[in-house]
Image 1 (cartoon, one colour):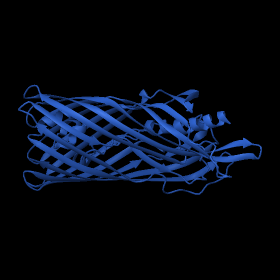
Image 2: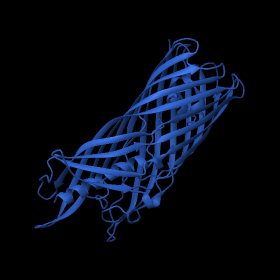
Image 3: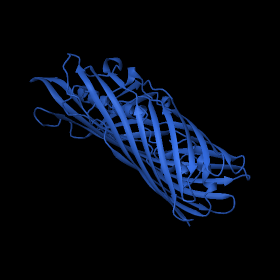
Image 4: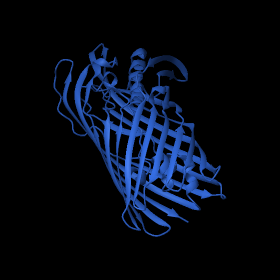
Length: 420
C-alpha cells in the first residue's frame, strides 16, 4: 500500500511541473504595454508599470510615482472528441480553463538626479484548469491551480545622459493545488481513488536591466530575469471513492524542486513625429531550464522514498510589434500584435495544460486627466492554434485518452498612474 500511495502522489506532483513548463507565464503586468501587445515593453518606460519589464526604465519616472492596475483574464478552452483507450466517448466540455484576475502595483521615488528606487508587486505565473471528476482522463488530472506573487525591490542609476542601469531582487511565492483520480487493486476488487496535493514555497531570484536613449525619440532596452528555484513542500490526501475513507491522513509530506524560468527581453521604441510612435519586442523564455523533477516522500518525518523524472520542454520565443497614435493632448490610441510559442509539443502535452502557439491582437487607450493623473485601458484577443492531446505519447502513467482543444483568451486591462 505504501508503494501505491507514493506512486499516486508522484503522478500528482509531476502534473504540477507540467503546469509550469507549459508556459503559463502571465505577461499581464501593465495595461499600457498590453495595448501594444507588449511590443516595446522593455524600452517603453511610458509609466511606472513598465518597471516589471525593465528596472532601468524607472529613471524616466521623475519624482514619486504610483501605478495600480489589474487584468481580468477570461480564457475559453473547448474540449471535443474525447475518447479513452477503449474508444468510449466522453461529452464535450466548454469550461476547462477558469477566469482569474492578475493585479499589479508599483511605487517609485527619485533620490537625486541619477538614483531611483522602486517597489513592485506582480503575479507572473498562474492558471486554473478543472475537469469533471469522472471524465475519461481523470488519472492524468482533474483540478490544477497555480498561484504566484512576486515582490521586487529595485534600483536604477543614470550612468550618463543616455545610459541607465537597473537591478531588482525577486521575492517569489508559489502555491499549487492539484487533484487527480486513480485506481488500485484490493481484496474487494479494483477500487477508485482521488488524490489531492497542496504545496507552497518562497524563494528568490534577480533582475538586471539596461536602457539606452539615442535621443529624445529613440531608445532600446535589455532585461534579464533569473529563474527562481522553488522547493515546494506540502501534504497529500488520497481518498477511496467507494467507501469515502482516506488512505492517508495527511501525515505523508512531499517536497519537489520546481523552477520558474529565466527570461531575456529586448525592446525598441521610436517616436516618428508628434502623433505616431512605433515599437517592437523580442523575448526568450527558458522553460528548458526545468530538466528534471525529483520527488522526496516523508512519513512521520522519516524518508520513505524518492523518484526522479526527466522532462522534455523547450525554450520559447515571443515577438511583438505595435504603434501608438496621439489623438489629442489627452487621448492616445495603442495597437499591437504578437506571436507567442507554446512550451509543450504534442508528444508532451497533458490535460493539465492544453497549450499551443498563440496570436495576440491588442488595442488600448491612455487618458491624461491632468499633469498628475492618467488612466490606461486595454483589450486583447488571443487566438490559440488547435491542440490535439494523446496521452499515449507522454509516457505518463494512467489510461490513455485523446481529445481536441480549441482555445482562446480575452484580456481586459485597467491601470491608474499618479505622479506626485
